Length: 313
Image 1 (cartoon, one colour):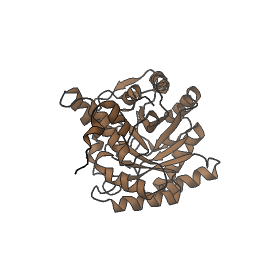
Image 2 (cartoon, rainbow, N blue to C red; image 1 turned 180 degrees about the horizontal axis):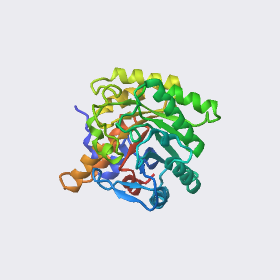
Image 3 (cartoon, rainbow, N blue to C red; image 1 turned 45 degrees about the horizontal axis):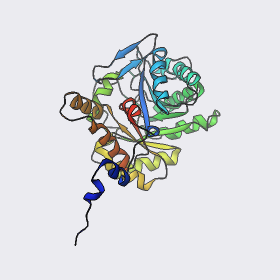
Image 4 (cartoon, one colour; image 1 turned 135 degrees about the vertical axis):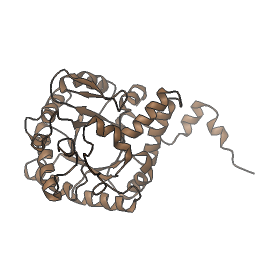
């Protein structure tokens, strides 16, 4: 005798009854590129269907997505001039945008990127000195907290930055602000489209001396453990698709939410493949489901608007 599996797959209703993994609207975080100024909507050439927005023009699409079930947005600031000081200015365009978004959508979870790469002239995530960089990152996080963010997401990969940020938030009355750390951020070629979108490509060298070696998984677990010990409430693994083994290992070992970032290169490859009719659009949901199946509690993805339109729950 042998066991028969095919009856479990005979039609869609039957497949649904036996399905193990489901993606739902609340799983998704929408990444947004913010620019200073007014009345700005800029299509990003490196990312089909993705735009940079000034906050006044962001409110309408954001409202539509909130109406479709969006629960969380991740904000990236793209300044029109370089300069580290503006990253933590109380009246900076990101800080102003946070306040405006929170006023219009008080129930929306706002997550803010905390990094320097879009602000430094050389495009690197630090100013040369690790600990001094961490002090500046803590100032940025504090300025975001004062503006009304719910969660700060340090993406720099400096040693100890969660400690510095946690200390600054706690000492200034913002102990309740969440820290979603990019605990395992790899030195990946999948970031190319994002770096053009955020104007943050390194002008010289690369980021291999602070972002993780793609060959390492055990080290990722050490990085995650260190960030949790320093005060991270949740952790991000980035990219997603080539690192699903790391997602699975992190989910099995740590009792914090695991977030996977379905990054720009992954997004753009699928978009071009679908738009070019090389594959059908079902591949998008297949890929996102694989990330959830690997163990991700939440997914940061540029496909979020599409999923919100399609998903039922």
